[in-house]
Length: 205
Image (tube, rainbow, N blue to C red; front, side, top):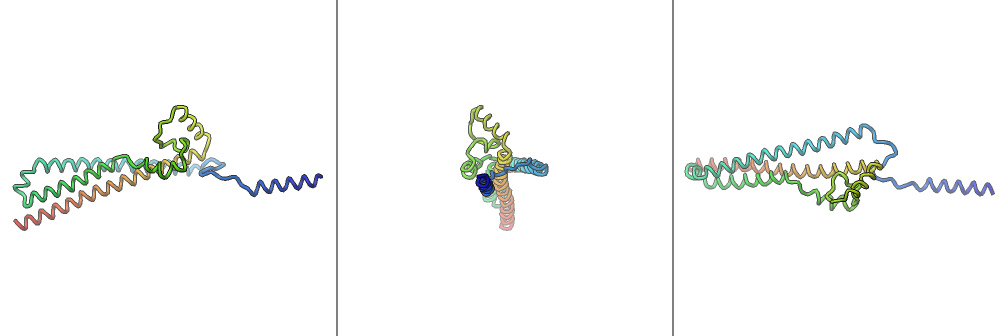
């Protein structure tokens, strides 16, 4: 009888070993290493510094474009009467600078984050506890506290929230630089075309 019980115990232990528990993402038994903490701190610092740099460049470009458009409007009659091909030059400049102005404003506009949340994050992470750092819902205080309590008690929720937030910030940053690059390219192209028209006007005149 004792042999039978011993065999049964051994079989149960083998079954427990052969069926491991499912591991959650970012779940570890030990605390993350200090190097990982430093990595996350440096990553967020780099992302926010890049966003601040993008915002400054956008605002500089907005001021430049507004100044140029204002100057073209103020000196409209003088340019039209005294500059060869002045009307064509002015129309080209206003269109190009206007496009650059709109693109620089769009680079500062916060948008697209809700689409990323809806399409890529919410289907797998719909609970508030999974998106504590970047959510657009209006939870009650009790719901928010309950979700935060779960985050405090769970390491995989803490790291997962930071990873998903850094993904969203990186998405916003890429979008900003895309519009900013387009704005600068539009302004540079406009300058080249305006100079070319001015030179043609001088040769024809």
